[in-house]
Image (cartoon, rainbow, N blue to C red):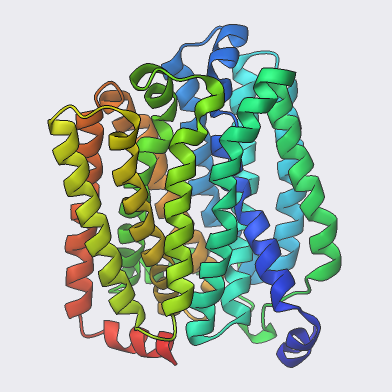
Length: 411
């Protein structure tokens, strides 16, 4: 197997960051591109809005649970093989959705999309931490997020155009084509990044013991719960976007950009700030700043909705500020979590994805059906999730075992 020094000599950081960003785009493309097609899918397949929303929950649930498999596989067989296999599987799953003749087969396709997207995202995230060290890892993840944020901005625009001109099935053909575009480039440009000494066993007893050990880490689980709550607050609006656009703002399928473009601009700004500030302030200070912005955003959001300020600007502006805070915090929180388990970064990445996407899935299936009819209740739900994350973060900073993690991240 290629040595670490040899891998660094042949692997272009630019190609790695670009391709990891493109792979990361699969998740938001899979979520946001088909949202403008909800009315068309409902009409053709004969399902209600509530039932069709469950196709998003199914995607998120299978994405979350399958990370428990992909992380250990990436630690045992290498990141590269897992990415290639999961990209090929994603392509076929998207084609199954495009060819679905009823709601059952659409659900099967969405479940498989979730499984395969998880594999590529988990393994590629571990590649970043394999290759980069210290603040460079945080900067690389910030660049990945800046490129990644193009997907939620473009996805509803592309989806709305495809639905209006070619029908809803063309959305899934587009997703298949996107995976097909990445696959050969990754095959040619990206070697394995995992060090030989980091190869882990996948014996069930070892895996169970490793998962228990990981979850018992005094910091790791709390860090990923903070990330999960932050993304959960975001997903209240993503999963409610069809109701928000069609029912509250009374817009059309090609108007989803009005919601997603400002939110994505906030993520882009937060990611840019994270990249620029990585060598100037500590990651802990950056997360503190992120929480200040996000807390201001939720306070503003709840206040505006308590006054029934339901025009598009007043609904969306606080979400953009929240997005800045979310993106500013995420790279540092991700690296802190990965550094809690330095010899099992594939497993750590899988558990991060499990909690984040699992939280998004729970929000979509349990909270959104209850609150999507009320903008005020959506704002309150987001506020409660952020406040919970803030309390946990405050506890983390006082824990003695957090200091070595911070030191390793800043080294």
